[in-house]
Length: 109
Image (cartoon, rainbow, N blue to C red; front, side):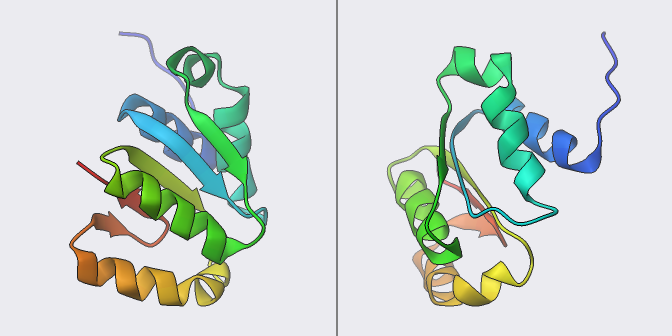
């Protein structure tokens, strides 16, 4: 088994890729920016055809990721912690739909 040393953001990104990620949607803001950048630069993600999009704001990033999860795909949404305030309407309504996920990560099956 090959071992890798990752920074925290890199570990999140690689774990998402390894878990079968189909798309990542994000609004830039440190420290979460590096997650999306890692996926965009990953040869593994390119080979798997993982879609990547910088969104207009946190709300649209989460809504788009949620839509992908409704379609049965695994989606990752990245934003800084205060960005969840912008996305809070979508986040609260997503909880009522039964989608498995947490702050910033929607996992559809």
